[in-house]
Image (cartoon, rainbow, N blue to C red):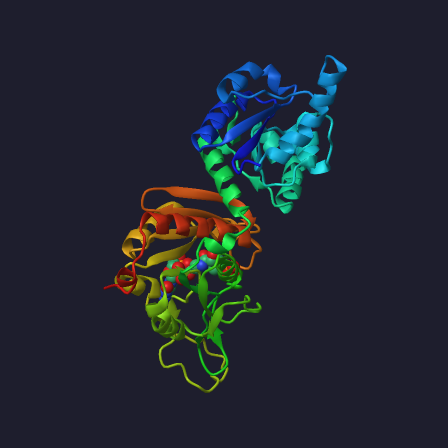
Length: 422
Ligand code: PMT
């Protein structure tokens, strides 16, 4: 089986013409592409276009229209294509196709092949904005996400029907990049990807005492940092996890260093720094603390209590001055100007990448991502690009982040000296 044979399903939407660009983008990434079209797709683009582009037969009908032998060969096609493909990408994935996939309907070659396919599935929806926002479509997407399929969120913009909003097929190059990343995740031996790296990860909140029993903290559950630690171990790295107080079991194979306050987190990070080759700061470190908090519980009175707060030391900024050849990955939890703020932190704190996540929208919590949530949605901000990663479980987000960390490493190999900052 070719490790880079891709099955490209084409749905019947106005964006079908862009699938030709996607086929070309995949071929530029050394893939062979087998195109499977729905009948509706043939109304928008001719099979000959794809045949000419890919140099391979284009498949569309479950049962050939002529001769028994053709019929038999055609019916076996959906099994063969699925067995030979390393990934299945469907673009455009229309609302109708998403519904059929979600409910396991198989009334044509593409949907039959989907049911027979066992590898990574990448879906790039494209449709009218109202159809995209319809609860039925969103429910189908939730089902498909839960199966672990990669959903390439459509872009906002002017649609063929004249409406402006989400629903435009994502750019073919972005879809192709996500297909290649999905292929990388499928590599059976992930363990070689970060072998030899020592990754220092911070996770969870810190607790800043007000007195002997009370403290200031935040809602970080530690899930994002722990997912990174689990994924890093799976990829062969040695992992040191400096964690604030959370209710999570430490991932197997990591060295856990529990801390409570920002000061304790800073001390633990600096103690572990010399061994680290990569640092990832996912912890929600308190920005302020109460100097000289009394060890006794403050007595409650009927008078207002005023607390004098002082800024904590910015650990990420300090690491930016000491990182040497290490890769330094920061996070940014923002409520507005997500990418601008993340880019500012990237430069100001000398990071190699900042993982930006919107945590609280102006009208309240962004549902289902960020603090405490099982999912997250991030933008990976690097010096020369910003890569949006659609909403997914935090373990999958961790995989995307570590993919980019590996790309950064491949672009800037580390030597022992550079890692020590010599
Ligand atoms: O833990 P979960 O419930 O899974 O939630 C995940 C998360 C939302 C906490 C996580 O995705 C996240 O955004 N973590 C960073 C939260 C944060 O403190 O963001 P910030 O923009 O305030 O800080 C920017 C960076 O500076 C962070 O890397 C932070 O670790 C670091 N920092 C901040 C303050 C400080 N005194 N020292 C630091 O190192």
